[in-house]
Image (cartoon, rainbow, N blue to C red; front, top):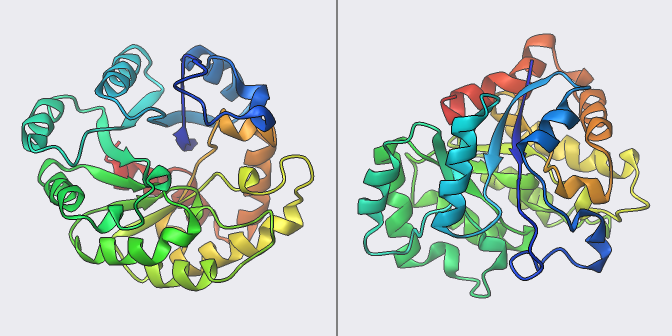
Length: 275
C-alpha cells in the first residue's frame, strides 16, 4: 500500500493560477479526482492527502466536499487565514470536519522575509495543536533559517516540510540548504515529504543521478520514521510522469528495510496526519 501525501486539484483559471507560466504550459488545464484516480490505476497508491492550491476558504470548502465524495481522499491540507483575529472561531467551525488534517500557507510567496516569524501568523499557528491540526511548511531553501526560528516557537506543534524545502537542484547547489535541513531535522516535531524535486531541476534535462545527493541529505537528516512519499501531481507532470516519479523514489528507498519503506510509503502518513 502507498499513500500519496501531496497532490493538488484545480479548475484552471489563468488569473488564479498565474504561477503556471509558459514553461509549465502543459498543466494549464483542470485536474479533478477522476483524473488522479485514473493516473493511480497503474500504481499501488490506494489513498491520498490533498493539498490546497489557492489561499481561500472557498478552496478549503471545495476540497472538503471532494473528500466527502471520494473515499480514496483520506485527508485535506487546507488553508485558513492564520493571521485573522477570529482564527479560533474558524478553527472551531472547521474542526467539525474530520477530513481536515492540516493547514498550509504559501510562505514561499510572501515578499516579507520575516512573515513566518511574525506575531500574528504565529498566534494563529499556536492554536493548531488544540485542534489536532498539522501545519505544512511551504518555503524556498533561502527561507530555512527563519523557518528554524519559527519551528522553535512551537515545540508541541506537528510540522510537515513540503518538497524538502525546494533546494536549488537546477544549479546543483547543496549548500547552504543541506546544512539548514540537517539543523531543522534536529526538531523531532518536523517530518518531511519526499516530493517536488523534479520541478526544482531543469524540467527537460534533470537526471536521477543529479537528484541523488538531495535524497541522501534528507534520508540522513530525517530518517525513515519522519519521511513521507508525495507526488506533487499534477505539477510534477511538467518534468515527469506520475509512475516514473514513484519508480524513482522506490529505487532510492532500496537501502531501507521493508518495514522502513512501509513507514515512508504509508505508516508515517497515517500517524502524522491521523488518517
